[in-house]
Image (cartoon, helix red, strand yellow):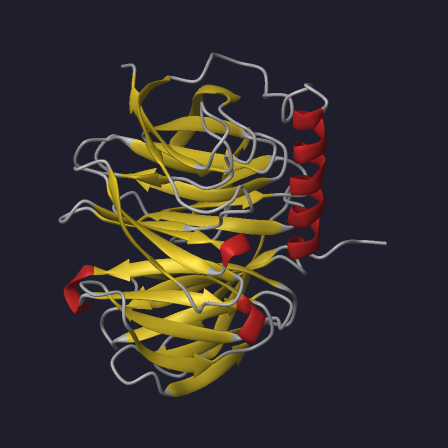
Length: 340
């Protein structure tokens, strides 16, 4: 039986934990150079060693918001002061988290309630809640229309929500289980992984209609998604076959494919360094570099069990990985910096 994306990630997390208990590590790294990162610090995180999910950085203020799914809370971390600012509870099975500094808001998907919550970035207070489709996961923001898009994974749809009021503006049916979503500001359109059909849906955010569909040959279960708008490229992680595709945003054609860690999950792109970080359920992190319009693997390695979430600071080029167990066996935020 083919598992859904959420079920795959749950199984991968359980297997990684079992391997860790057996002293076997969390999975093999793809062949190639070692991970081009070195430890730059470790910040203790509150709570137990249950699953973390997405993370989002307000780079201007140095505030990182981490979804602690297992604890149903968002953890706010000051990465400059190296301390936890607060935890924000009441968000059942929180998955996605997205900070929008211009609004002083943080948006989070509470999957257990099929809701999206808008949080005050300064106080952590919940300002609005909005209903979504089934199993809301990732998030994207359309600044032109002041709209937040939630990916409803098992619901196979996108819910479009007014960022200011929390009112639902509409729903976009994708025709299959949904992966992540991103806003392409240069072309004024939304892109959404349809992991159930192996394609990217190109959506008109004004009409909420799917304008076209781009097939993704060589991709099994497209889940992760990140953009380099300047280079007109999309990066798509395929968690079914441990592959990373580079897609031309002008034509929709697949330009290249690279190996990454088993069950790739969260992507983070550093546009200044032209570096893409791929964090996998296996605990393997792969760093790829963009040369022209082609990616090459700069290095890969097993960073830590549970290191399937990454955020990157485009100013300092440091990357952050929340993990269930740091050096002392307690939850921690691992900070890494480039070695070159």
